[in-house]
Image (cartoon, rainbow, N blue to C red; front, side, top):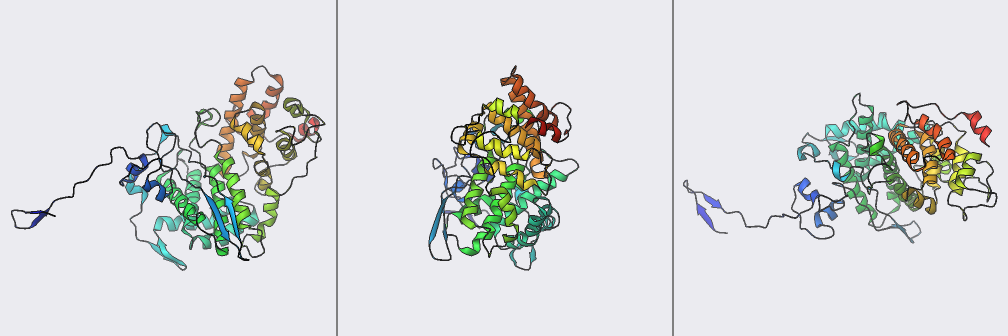
Length: 441
C-alpha cells in the first residue's frame, strides 16, 4: 500500500477505500458491524441467529431471535430422529417501540469470575444473576419438585452449555425487573443481549446432530424459553396488549412456543430413566398427559358456555373446534390456581387443537371468551404469567365488549373475567365462586 511520510519521518498509512453500507439492516447498524445487504437475510444476522430487518417500517423487532430448520438426534441405538422445529416467537417489542441499545451496556468490561466447571468465566454481574437464579428465581418458576431440579441441576448444566446459561441469565434479569420496587415496563439491554445470544447458540445446537448428553440441557433451555414466552411482554396497558394492539408478529408467542416445546419434549424425552428431569415426570404428565373428557356431548360444561358455543349432545372434537378446549377449561374452573397446581392449568395450552388456535389467531369471539376465562384463572398463579394474563384478559374483555355489544349471553360470561383481572376496579378480584360453578353445571 502506498505510504506518505509525515513531518517527523514516520509512515502515514492510507486507509483502504471501502464502500459504506447505506442500505444495511437495522440489526447491523445497532451492533455496529458491516452489513453485506444480502436479501432476504444478511450474513451477519444469519450467523448471529436473529431475523434480518431492513426497513424502518418492518414489524420485525431489533435483534429478534430466530430458530428454524429440522432437528436431528443421534439416539443410543444409532438411529436418527428428525423433528421440525418452528421459528421461535418474536420478541415483544413492536416496530414503533424498537429498543435502541447503547452498545457499551451490552457487554460487560468487568473482570470475569471463574467457577469450578466454568472454563469460560462469568463477569461479576452475570455471576450475581447465576446466584440469584439458584437461590431465588429457580424456586419460583415451577412446582416444589420442579424447583428443586431447576435449582440443583439446571445451574450446573448451564456452566457447560452457554445457550442454557444465556437463557438463565435472561429469565433472572426479567425476574429482577419484576421484583424491583420501581419495575421497568420494557425489556432491559441485558435481557435483550442474553436472549439474542441464547437464540443464536440454541439455533446452532438444534441445527446439528444432537447426542444423548445434549438432551437434558436442550430440554432445560426449551422449558425456560417457554416461561419467557409468557413473561416477556412490553405492554403496559390493555390498549397495548393483544388483541387490542395493532397486529404484531409476536402476537400469541406463548402459543407458538408451546408447539416448539412439545417438539423438543418428544426429541429429548425428559421422562426417560436416565434424565435428570425424571423426578418431575408427574408434572409432565399433569401438563401433557391425556385429559379425561367424554368422546362427545356437553357433560361437565357450564350451561352458559354450552349456549354461547352452540354445543350439543352430539358434538365431538371433529364437529366443533371449541369442544376439546372447553372440556379442558371446564375441569379447571373448580380448582384454585396456585404454585402447586399451576402446571395443571397449563393443560389448556398444551391441549389446544390446530382449529382452535386458528380461531384465536382470527380473534374469534367465542375462542377469545374461553381464553379470557383461562387468563382470569391463572392471573394470580405464578409471577411469570401474571402480567400477561392480567393485561390480555383486560384487552379481551374490552374487545369483546365492543364486538359483542348487546349479546346478553356473552356479556354475562364477561362479568367475572372483568372483575378478576381488575378491569373495572384496577385491582385483582376474587377467584371464581365455586358454588356458582356448581350451579352452572
